[in-house]
Length: 103
Image 1: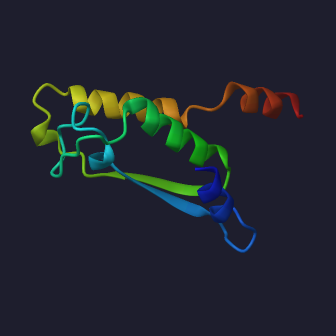
Image 2: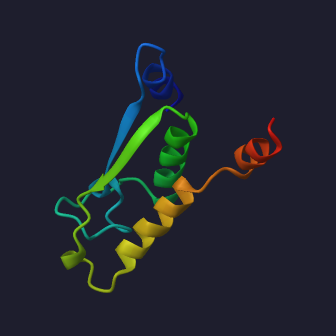
């Protein structure tokens, strides 16, 4: 991840766009996709990946695709996806404190 972010954050680029496919998540946590994947990412792994990408400050956008609500019988997969996105996109408390204090 560090190597990818280093390449994406080089000065010759204006930034990078994040495309996250919900079908890259493990089948046990995300059955609401058209292409189910055993051994995919966990919620924690997804959160860590997106949090790292967003922390680089070079991310210019994010899209999440492939989630299919018609395949989510009880809504649990959608809730899990939403919770993971909220956790990944929440400001880092340390960054927020340094912004507020002017550091």
